[in-house]
Length: 591
Image (cartoon, rainbow, N blue to C red; front, side, top):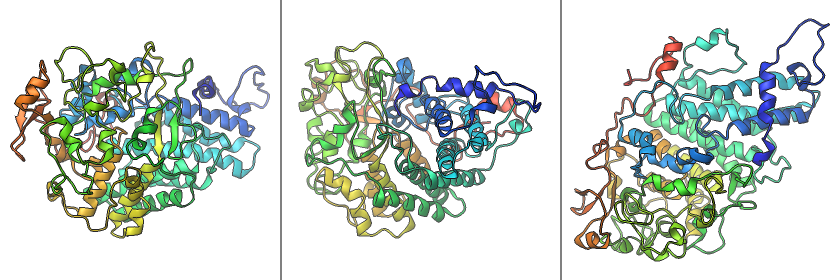
């Protein structure tokens, strides 16, 4: 739904929340105000109230579910692009991204109050529950009413799932609370009970939301297909979490993930964007301002001058750059990992890195020959890559500049906070990846399953198909999973890079120890030192191959990252919340 449709919706919410009920039948309600007693009459009233949820969820910090880009100055931190900074995908050094560096290094500080993307946003739950308690008053059919109930329950289930993923147990609330309610000071609801409630909300939404709201879906309200995509994401997380961390009935959750994804695949109106141009199709739609009509983009956030804008392109330098770890995960053109393929040309120069590799690599990381193609750094004419310390231009901590999302036309000649880069909230590729992984985790995946999911993504970039029995990449032989799951996870990392998935993926797979590896950049040789004159970097030798690389955090507080298996899979609760409610217990390791 376009942002201008949300303007003013919040006012309705505030009026409703402040309105008081009165049992006196002689009490007359003001004719010039909206009140709780007079509002809930028509379908339009319900639709107007539900618009509030879209408006509130524009705040990607307090309600980080429909993640896109915050506007103005907050574009520098609240964006789905930056979520990969919690992981081994990106290596930020900018002081404004200190929180990402702390979490990445395992040195997260227990906050006094809500931190970024943290233990906050509970006013959103209250708004949802106000609606759910009042929709029944409208004189409309049950079928129509259930559309709006489903919309609210989708938001509630999605919100709570995100909180469970970060904090574990949560305070589940499903009615409007006032300042004197005892439930405000209740203990957290156990994780599995809360997730049962989440699943009930999502199942209701996928049953009662319409396939199409008749709004053109440009971007539009969340429809049934979006609810199914969200359900596949949430259930895959919960199923794999329970499988690898311990928990009851992980198979049920994995089955629900697979079934939800398959329903979208079989009956939904979506398809992989593929024009037959493997050298450009992967990143083409990540680099445009208008995603209308794209068959792969299921839900997106539009930004429009004079209504709602961002500055995320100009702030992207804060991410530092992509890592050696990410770059090495791209396969060679024979479908083999670089550790096994005779086609791999090594990494002595950055140009070598791109030879005989999955085309998604060159559509994600800047090749020096592509600076003019992308009008890189607003077409400044300099040679790239450029490393921190080099004079002029756009520098990176690793040497790996990112172009997957890059749109110079959204920066050239534009003033601060007038950019319109859209945010992709749900895309069909994720649904395919969710399906393949869920089926593989259940131990029942077939070649046909791979062909209707991952191999559609490979077809777009003209890569060999994934077969049921791929060779084991020796770099992942100690992960305790099958070679097929290794490749499915690799595909997810490559396809969904810079879309905010890597951190949750590592957590649910119980692979947090991967975050103890240092973040390295490009190969550093005497030739590189001459080529990148002025670069202010530290280097280390990679013990796996004996070569020297940029070491982004050497000599800093983040030089030796740690990951405590008993602590870091969850985030700490704020001290203020613990002080206000003695029933809350801090997560393990943070006391």
